[in-house]
Length: 282
Ligand code: NAP
Image (cartoon, rainbow, N blue to C red):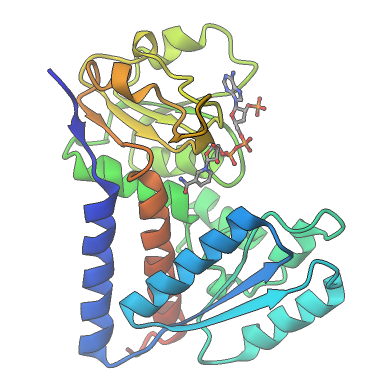
């Protein structure tokens, strides 16, 4: 039997509609500021999507498009100004930054209460220690998709392939917080397929087109595909061989139309949450 598709498009529109309704009933207008440095084409598309989502939900949106040669102090100066502006609740610096800029320094100059990407040391530390904070959008979106499958996460065997700071590690921590038994795999893992084939929940965040085949997947499991790659024909595809794996998994996310759209929706959720952290009386 073919797996049920976890449809990121409909889930994301549901989340955005709910946010629109919530801010309408509260009469509030959370504000999101996005900083884009340079001319990276993919980044331009991502930033355009974020602006579109923010306006669709009814947020205040400001985009700062800066030339590639902008200096570090100019960017951190802009962030300091945005940190102090009450109508801006969320700040995001689109990554990657041009190579001459210190990504770590720039990201960490965002006030943690406005860190809607969840990439600052403060947000990462809060996630690690289980204290309330803003959680990175992609892993947060993955958890929502796993919950949408309706399977209880508690006690399940969860395997994450990938250990990056923006996806793999926070994903593993979130699954742990949901009481899954978590294994993190990476490029040095021995007998990877044996480990993944025991996963009730498998999250692939590798960056290799169609890497996860049916032999690596447990019958009836939930398979979440974070990857965004191009196949040999130049078509967008995930880390999972969708056609093969969908015949074995119980639930699967497609690429496109899966985690990417949920990541965008979670940015909107985080902006709303940031507003509520900054305005607890609302
Ligand atoms: P990354 O920083 O390059 O990390 C990739 C991870 O995969 C690393 O931990 C690496 O292990 C592991 N890996 C590589 N080859 C492997 C192999 N043969 N076997 C097992 N593990 C292997 O990438 P990332 O930023 O986490 O992103 C991963 C993918 O998700 C990319 O395709 C990216 O475009 C996509 N992505 C999508 C979204 C979205 O919204 N949908 C958001 C972010 C990222 P080592 O640590 O040992 O090198």
